Image (tube, rainbow, N blue to C red; front, side, top):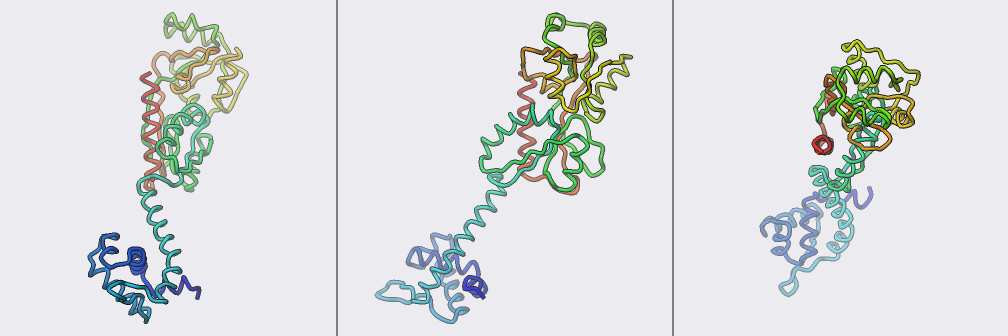
Length: 310
């Protein structure tokens, strides 16, 4: 058996901690103060270790505690074990306090590009030692990522219907139409619901794929309003739709966070009547959310609240 493995088998971790403290301080009383034990507890621990080892670790010389030859050899060998033990304690503490660890996030492209940059910047300032992985996925993939434990938390608009998932609201706002900037005056003057639908009817829509939560909500809105959008361009991400709107190829529907990101080549206006656009965090039901995941949700809430109230 390897020397360190043999030492761990003979001496308990507590014995090693006490032994190291005595070696470092040179006395039983000082070691007791260092590791917050009584002097008698330190003496008993050393005596037990010596009994298990079969030889003394210290002897008295002129009133001083002097390590034996065996004690010196064991001190050198046990130092590496003690350092690993202290590292383990620090890691356990940091994981409990959220100071370090791994956080894995799954989110739709709109959230990844418009919300997470600000949220991650804030999160990193308070958790600089946490490793963060971001998985940019489409809505239908979030459930799979969570259920297979590939990620700790997911972010998406509206709901995800799956019995294995639980959701937590993190923010809400309006669903908006985004148009080329040349329509800014029409929109800014205060456009009525009827006029807005007439304007949207006269322009091609940059449509998103059917599984996009925003576009599905928009289609329900159109159905209620008796409005049938027309267009010839279908894209998978709202970021591409936004760029096509900026190039005056049509209009699209966006969430409140995207609308808050000001740019001069587009204009936004809420759909009328008001259409709610919630943002939710998702977790697997059979796994308790990690501390880091809960803190990330709180960070996203704060960023959304500030962006909505601005």
